[in-house]
Image 1 (cartoon, each protein chain N blue to C red):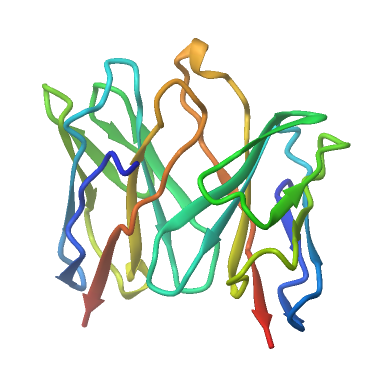
Image 2: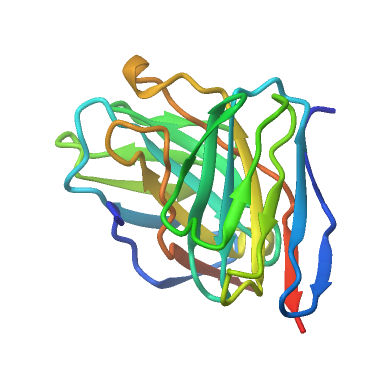
Length: 110
Length: 118
């Protein structure tokens, strides 16, 4: 059922930008891309979502390619508290179901 | 503050016993969901409900049951038929725009309930 592909893990130095890629080559024209993160043993936290245009909020930026087959979540200045598992997800077919894969484990180091 | 409350946070159960996990939201959201997470794994959808008195099976519904008698509440019962119930259970809710509206569907999650079968 997984419709997105993410690297299993990534490292990032504190203060540097963390760029987390996601492939969603089968995405439909009206499907949003969502990003969540989960800090150990807590509920996932919503970060950002987008359809076609790049998006930015207080937490992150989302860059979506023109063909919409991939996207990148950018944490501009990673901190140790950004260490978490990051999930890139899209909707399943014509439903409201969002299927979470195994995500990318981001480790921010001092 | 609006949010989702799950209880209990930790629960221990003996084999063969049913157990019910509570999920309450005061966000006035129509849709509610239950996910299961095993160590090192992603989330898997158990059940979801888009409206009161209606719910649909997710990908791993066997051994679980739910009810949606009130908009604010979506309890999950883990029955004795669930062979591997030890897991972290997460409840979520969202404004149900429906796929037909092609809107965004942002989920708000609770803090989770960790169930351990002894």
